Image: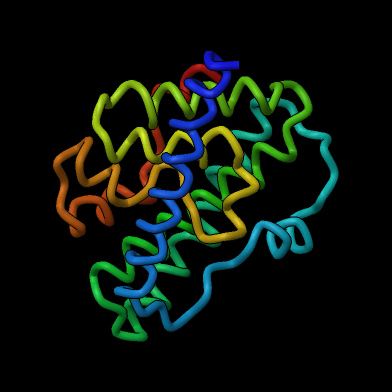
Length: 180
C-alpha cells in the first residue's frame, strides 16, 4: 500500500500543479480565435482509423500546412500577442498530432504516449517538463487546454523565447520524416 502511494501521490500532485499552471497561463492570454478541435479535424478530414504510419505522417504534415499556418496568420491578423500566438499555435499543433495519431492503425497509441513521456517529460529533466507527464500520458486532457509539451516546458527545455518557439512551431522533425 505504501509503495502504491509513493507512485500515485507524485502523479496527483503533478496533475494538480499542472492544472494550476494552465489556469494561470490561460488567464494571462487572450486568444481571439479558437483553435480548431480534434472533433473539427475528424469531421473535416475523416474519422476512420485506416492509415498506415507513413500515411499518418503525410496527413500530419498536410494538416500543418492546411490548418496550422493559416490559423497562425488569422491570429496575427487579429493582432494577437506573441504569448497568445505561441499558446494557441502550440494547442493546435498538439490537436493536429492527436488527430493524426488517431487515424494510425499500425502504431499502438500507448507506445506513442510512452514516447511523449520520455521525450517531453523525462528527457529534459526539469520540473516544468515533469508537470507535462500527466498530459503526455493521458492525451484526452487536451480537451481542457493542456498540451504535450506545454509552452512553459518548451521555454525551459529549449531556452527559447516566444518568438523562437513560434518560428519553429510548424517545422517538422526531419528525423521522423526520414524514418517513414
